[in-house]
Image (cartoon, rainbow, N blue to C red; front, side, top):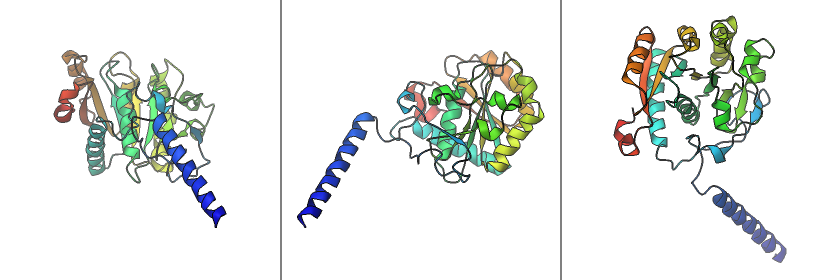
Length: 274
């Protein structure tokens, strides 16, 4: 009996030390629930390479991994509104765009994907199609990720450039290379294959594309006819009215699901985030 009591005491002591160590390492509060690499996505666990996120850098890039972050609720509201509109219309693909650089479209795309991934059965896929300034893998902290351009250039299959991050129920198709042939790639049969595979084979309820800014290159213009809808991101105090008007003109024949006002003052966020 004494041996059993000693064993139980050691087990409880070890558990307490582990909990204390975890709390000290992440004092900002609990992160989003995640279950190792890939979470609960229905596809075979060994189909995709795993990719570890650098959670310690999430705050610097404004990526939310903390359940206590006050901005989290805004992205949950955004998730619900986006999914409601997309489900009503039967849409599966959404491009996140901005008029110019620096508006925070990549941050919005990543946080939206994480928020959707937290919803049971959503199986989102996040795709980095910003061929001028690819940033998704850098913001998530992936080390030596594959490049989507290898797929477009016929060097690798889509499964080989798709990864499972250690975030719940999310697949990411990252890119690490810059190209000026973006419009050519995004109007090719490979682009159609990418969409078809993500929606049908990967069983994704929502495929999110992080695109290049609308103004300054034709990559996004070339790809827009292939997506169901667009989420427009503008930066408070940065995006000009003239840029928004030009973006509105460009998107006249596109299903604009809504506009996100990013970088708004924290005091206004609760009531005027959108």
